[in-house]
Picture 1 (spheres, rainbow, N blue to C red):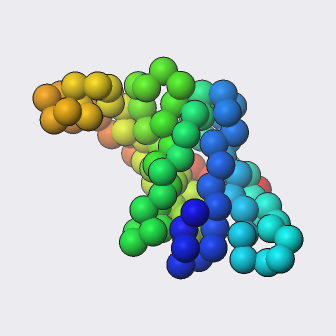
Picture 2: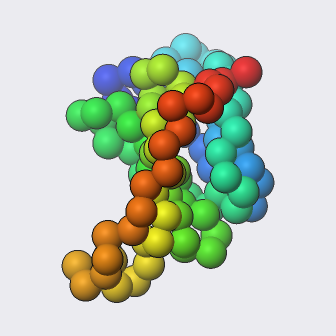
Picture 3: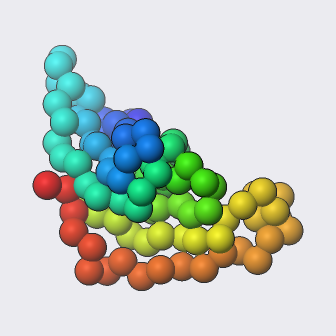
Length: 103
C-alpha cells in the first residue's frame, strides 16, 4: 500500500493485470485494472516514488507501474537471482511510453 495515496496494488495472480484499490474509504473501492505482462505474482510499493514493482511468475522481468498516473512506466527484463545479489548484468529495459493506463 502506498500510504500517501492510500492506494493498494494487487498482482492478479498468474494473470496479466494489476488492480488498484483506493484503500481510504470505509469500504475500499477498485479504481482501475491495468494490463501488464502475463504471470503477475507479487507487488512491492515504493511510497516515496508512488511506483509499484510487479514481478512475473518466472522471475524473468519486473513491471514498473506508476501509482500516480496508473500506467506502466517500463518493463525491466533479465532480472534473476544473480541480479538480486549484485552479480548479474542488470537486465534490459523496454520502453512503454505508448502503453495505456487503467480502464
